[in-house]
Length: 521
Image 1 (cartoon, rainbow, N blue to C red):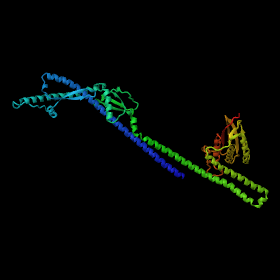
Image 2 (image 1 turned 180 degrees about the vertical axis):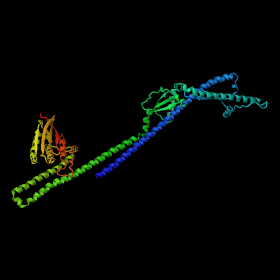
Image 3 (image 1 turned 180 degrees about the horizontal axis):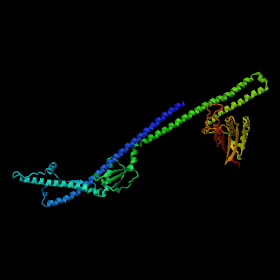
Image 4 (image 1 turned 90 degrees about the vertical axis):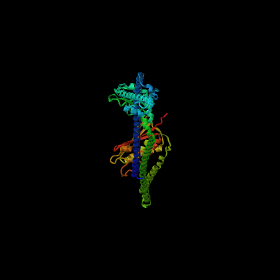
């Protein structure tokens, strides 16, 4: 798959995922807004009803007080010659209060329209007719007179109550006008009537901004959870009292509507993370594929070159003139021998790939003196370094040099590091290589340093990756498989050691190996 195709799929999927997340978040916000508006509406409706209930209680209280006064006045009026004895039939209406008390209001059992007509017109029947109907007419006339007086009296009482509410009620302290226990019951009842069963606490504040009453749990920290309602809104504007109700679980009530969104959002995020991991893995596989292709191309070139050289040398040996000349024959056979070794070394590198498919390499570990191995490797590479007019020095400061390693593989590690130093030397400067050892605690530190072209900082962390080669554009002057340093890292790690690289461009590279030592008893 082309890299552009992968990028296109990645962009499309990212747009789809983020659009889905945006729609989910947008819908969650809308749901929360609707839920909040619903809560606000239910609370405001409940508090308005509470204010109305308090006004009705106040009106009823004033009516009870005036009726008690009117009864005493009416009884005095009856004793002084009134017509109370004329009223033959009446009924009682019982008004029940929430505190359990009852108020009895007498109602005359007559047609309401007749009473209203009597009260408004003031016209009453006069006794007339024959002698037989005189007593009936007299009784009817007296009854109408009594009802008219009673109606006018009750109407006067209502007017007095209205005047008291207008002029006296607003002057009374709010704590005398309402019962806070009843107020709590009204709030709870109205909230339940509006299907709002949530905990609350409240405050009552008078027109001087003085807190008259505060129930337990009231808090001013969250103003968005506090709702205010005017008590007795018909009072004068300068004497308005307020009821403040606090709902500590408002946030829970609002978020309960969108609780089912959270699993959906979590699963969407999991899918997004999985997709990102998949895309990253695709790019990694793509990079590994390119590295393998580069490896195959380099391997073909590296194997083809010695094979061609051997083939050419073999053809020269078929020439009689070559066989007759000992020097030429020796040179040709030497070329064949060198190229055969080179070919075998390249094949060995390819076989080293099998090491990377195992969690741990099968090593023949034994106790050796690491300084002896360094001296042997240095002696082998001296001629190669001198070929480029270079210099190879060793500085063996370590005293405790006995380590448990596989001698053959560790020798190959040092060979790879020295070969890289010569491969990536600078053209105009003779190579200078240095191998040092020193002890740090119970470890031996081996450093291989050169003055070559160096490595960029962004490439230093990748040089130990399999098939990775530092990019040099389209130049192929340095051939390789990208396996050398990966092999070095694996061997050192399997020997319970560590390796790291320090490099600066155009100044050189330094590889530092750390291995545990064996303390001599």
